[in-house]
Amino acid sequence: YHRGPDDNGVYADKENRLGLAFQRLSILDLSVHAKQPMISKSMDWIIVFNGEIYNYLQLKKTLSDNSILWKTRSDTEVVLESIAKYGFVKAISMMDGMFAIAAYNFKDKALWLARDKFGEKPIYYGKDKKNNFFFSSDLKALMASKYFHKKINYNNSSEYLRYGYVPDPLSILENTNKLNPGKILKYDFHKKMQVIEYWNTYLEFSKIREKPFKGTYDSAKEELIFKIENATNSRLASDVPVGAFLSGGIDSSNLVLSLREQGIDIDTFSIGFEDESKNEAQYASEISRNLKTNHNEKILNDNDCINIIPDIVKFFDEPFSDPSQIPTFLLSRFARKKIKVAISGDGADELFGGYPRYKNTSKLWSSLKKLPKFLQRNIELYPYFLSDSKFKFVKSLGKKIRKIG
Image 1 (spheres, rainbow, N blue to C red):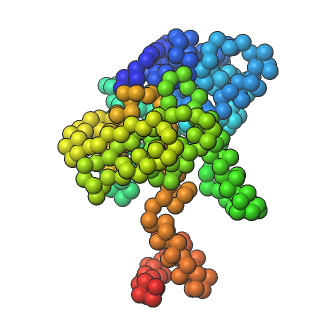
Image 2 (image 1 turned 30 degrees about the vertical axis):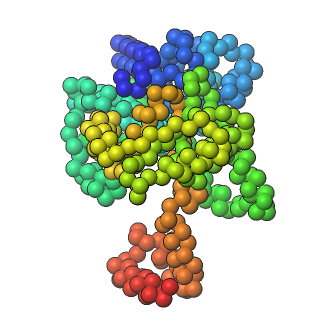
């Protein structure tokens, strides 16, 4: 219910022993026609879909060439009719977006689940005490069932203590898993489960490394600007107000700059802190002044952060230790008073070297280049492929390198 709510729908089918429920946050086509669960025109498929497909207009144009008459302007209908036209696996591989999708095929009596390439939307699944298959993009929805196993998996909790979160495909609860990013799960009438990979980030990265960019530095800049413009523009499709989170860092600043250079006016939002040692709001204000955005700023104190912790715990399905969750939650709540959709530069620090550790790592690798190749390789693979003796040797070598440089 906390997702909106703008609309909701329930589908129950005793013959197929199928139940689907959806709580809608309306972004595209706010009318009742875009309600979920949604059934395809062929009546072969039914879908519930959390997320957004950025290339839905291109997919829609291709399907329109096949004389499909549309009843909505939503991306949900495009996803549904793409699945009906191409089959589930092929249709999902054509989609660019963030999503958790569940679709049931009445002819084959099979349920299909799909998670986006990078796992922006989660999908939890497993079997309950009565051996029924369950799934949801929100763990709390499953916990509402009296048949659900509400028991902590202490083996997996050790992963949380190690990483600060519970990595896929594990979950913090017993008998419950998360579908990995880039994966499709099929569950058929005979209770047979099959997982299919339609995207592997590491393999895609490996392919790109084999064909590095051959152009000049200037042409690389042009290509990067083009890609940022493409990415930002495709995420603006909405029938509700859209804004941007602006921190003043390289990622969100580039995002807002790209929008302004495309002639797009957008509200920007940032938060700051009364403690000047932690306050970065002045950077966001400076960027906003330069780019002439309609800027919204809120300054927080320590009590604002402490008082919000009980609410945050309610909204996270699993334990999560990133301290940025507190300011991000407060920023989202602040922005929600004016807009319904926000775009941000989250995740771009890894691409643009946004943290000091990337600069320090670069310096370290410059020093390591002076070492023999086999030693470089061993250090690169640490900590997974070093034996204890090799690790001790590399560790002592590292200390010497630090003394040198």
